[in-house]
Length: 307
Ligand code: AMP
Image (cartoon, rainbow, N blue to C red):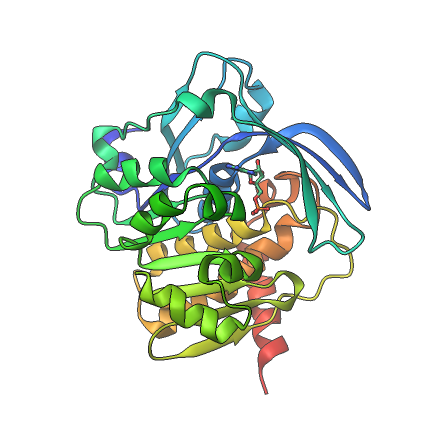
C-alpha cells in the first residue's frame, strides 16, 4: 500500500482473526476464516478503507490471508504471533438464533498487546470488535481525535470482564450488541428499559441486534426500528453481527454523515451486508460481493419497508 492510500484510510478495527469450525442445520465447515475483525474488515471494504489491528499465528493459512488481502484493507497492523491462531468452534440449533460455543482457543490472542502503526493513530472512525475489553481500551489509548468510536462485545466479557468493559463503554459513541447481551449488561429484560440503562453507561447511541427480527436504534432523543432482510435460506449466521457493524461503519465513514438520518441509512446498509454473509459459510459470500449487488438489495430493502 502506498503512502497516499495510507493517509486516507477511514476506519481502524481491532478484533479477532481466526479459524472457525461451524456446524449448522445446513452442513458444516472446518477451520475456515473467521473472527470479528475479518468479517468487519471485508464488509466495510465495500464502502471505504480499513486498517486492521489483530494477531494471527504462524499456522494461519495462506488462502485465509488471501481473503483479507484487498486494496481497501491495510494489514500493517496484523501481527504474526509466536504460536497457533485463535480458534472458535460453534454449533447452531434448528432455531438459528441460538448457538453453542463448543470450543474456544485463544492461542496467540492470549499474549496480544495491540500496537498501532503510526499511520493508524489518527484514523477518524474506530471499531472495537469483539475481543477482550482490556485490548479494546489499549487500542483507544493509541488513537487520537477519532470522529466516531463503535464497539461490540459478547456475553463472555459482560460476565467475566465487567469492570474493563464498563471502562470502555464510557469512551464509546455507538455500542452494537444483541438483545441477549443488552439484557445481561443492563440487568433488564425489557429492551426499552435496558437501552435506557445502557445509554447511562456512556454510549451516545445503542444498536440492539435481534437476529431475524432486525435492529433497534436507541439514542436519548429517539428510537428507530429496521427489520432484517427476509431470506429463504440461511446457511451460516456466523459473522452476521460483525458484517452488520462493517456495513454500518463503512457507510458512515464513506458518507461522513453521522447525523441521526445518516445513522438510520447506515443501519440499512449494515443489514444488507449481513444478509449476504449468512447465505454461505465463513466469508465465502461476503468476500464475493460487489457494491452493485449491495445497492440492488438496498433498494429492495427500501421498498420492503416503505408504506
Ligand atoms: P458473530 O457471529 O458476528 O457474533 O461473530 C462470530 C465470530 O466471532 C466468529 O468468527 C468467531 O471467530 C469470533 N469469536 C467467537 N468468540 C470470540 C471471542 N471470545 N473473542 C473474539 N472473537 C470471538
